[in-house]
Amino acid sequence: MPAHDVLIIGAGLAGQRAALAAAQDGASVAIMSKVHPVRSHSVAAAGGINAAISVDDDWRSHAYDTVKGSDFLGDQDAIEIMCSEAPGEVMNLEHMGVTFHRNDRGEMDLRAFGGASMKRTAYVADITGQALLHVLYEQLMKHHETVERFEEWFTTSLLTDEAGNCAGVIARDIRTGALEVFTAKNVILACGGAGQAYRPTTNGLIVTGDGISMAYRVGAPLMDMEMVQYHPTCLVETGMLITEGARGEGAHLLNANGERFMEKSAPNKMELASRDVVSRAEQIEINEGRGVGPDGRGIYLDITVVPRKRTLEALREIVNLGRDFAGVDITREPIMIRPGQHYIMGGVKTDVDGRTPIDGLYAAGEVACVSVHGGNRLGANSLLDTLIFGRRAGEHAAARAAAMGPPKIDAGAQLKRDADELEAIIARPREGGRRVSEIKNELGDTMNKHAAVFRDEEGLNSALETIHRLREESGKAWIDDRGTVFNQDVLGAVELGFMIDCAETTVVAAIERKESRGAQYRTDFPERNDEEWLKHIDLTLKDGEPEVSYSEVTFTQWQPEVRKY
Ligand SMILES: Cc1cc2nc3c(=O)[nH]c(=O)nc-3n(C[C@H](O)[C@H](O)[C@H](O)COP(=O)(O)OP(=O)(O)OC[C@H]3O[C@@H](n4cnc5c(N)ncnc54)[C@H](O)[C@@H]3O)c2cc1C
Image (cartoon, rainbow, N blue to C red):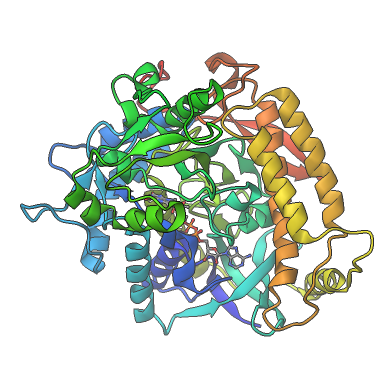
């Protein structure tokens, strides 16, 4: 039975940064991932990472932009930490070997991004996530004596002791099917978001809300779950992302009349307003019949206004993406896009050191909600969030481990429960049940229909009813693979359960919040209502149902004001 000071579930940017920090502070560390670490979804991040590095910039300006972007729901103490620590973190990454793009003067180049009052996004062409992830992985290799890697291991649940503290996990070796107990003084969840609960999404197939659900199932509260980001520029058919870096480089959005319609809703920032504002503006154009394409489902993103040489240098991946997935040369003609599910602002509620209310359980990255993004995340603030709060969680967990003895736990019953559940899924008969993939697709379509850019009570209630039915059906869903070696089918069934938890809590919170703020736009409550709703919605699992409570938003320097771009 492996035992460690700090066990990290997830090897994306948050997990790897946490592992590095904990190892540097002398802890024995294990890092577990259901895919090879450098295939974690952070690898897809394209546009860049925010930091007030420029001599003309100040972290307070970054913090204010983030607060405003969050529609004043972000906790300002956490935002101050993230933005003030950002320049040091980015410089540290550069010293580790990240080849950030440089300008003609040899300085780190910065590009414009949505909702930012000046250029502050450092980038490596449009492969920033990949560059960061590979450098961090190299750094982890230096600590191979104290960091044990469990690659292609799938965590099925969190272990808790009699007092309800977290004491490890149960995990399955994907290669062999063996199920094992891992004990740890501290567990850091760094499992990423839950985009696959939607269809389509910009998120990869592995982004299934596992960490959010596992924490919720052991009693950790979730926060801001109603806040789901739709990115303004996703390919119409596949939902694949065209990075905001394209608009940062100057691309325009055009409706069927060739108009730059952002003039109406964001006359100052235009295409570089925050994502919730741009996505809503696009959806209005589409809904009111000014969309482009065969059935008016799209909007044109015109990148031809960016000098071709610059596009080929700074946006080379989306040049390939446009050609391969839409048959469009973006340097010569506009490409059709629309808003698509991209990111969840909510997640496992934590403090600024990544601690959850459950002793021994931490969370960092997209799985967590600190909350630095509040109602809407600014582009290029997520990579920053993963690194700052990943590091802080790693440091805190290492210090806590140094001051305590190993957990005392008899995990036999929990191991048997998970083993029995997996066996039962594998043994399910085909008769009377649906395929896992059919249920997953219906879940995704339902969320995309009713819990998207625009929402109302009727649609959300109908979504909740469907989710309850799908939960029932998931209990009988059958799979093809009856084997043990690389049985992704059985893990897909487990992931379906995780996604249903995420979808349910998203919809319950969206029904609860009777106002419009950030990414939550209720057509039946179209105004922001600070008097009643300037608070977080927290959800805790009680008797199988999400129980709603509220928590205060933390204010430091900035009072709510009308949000205009
Ligand atoms: C296409 C795209 C482009 C983006 N571009 C940007 C950008 O330019 N700038 C920006 O700031 N943000 C960007 N984002 C957002 C950002 O990339 C993510 O929010 C961030 O990388 C999430 O990192 P993470 O470490 O929290 O999780 P991830 O990188 O998703 O890692 C999750 C880890 O958890 C593991 N895991 C999950 N469940 C289990 C389980 N049950 N058992 C074991 N392991 C498990 C996975 O294997 C993986 O290692 C982009 C997102 C997308 C989708």
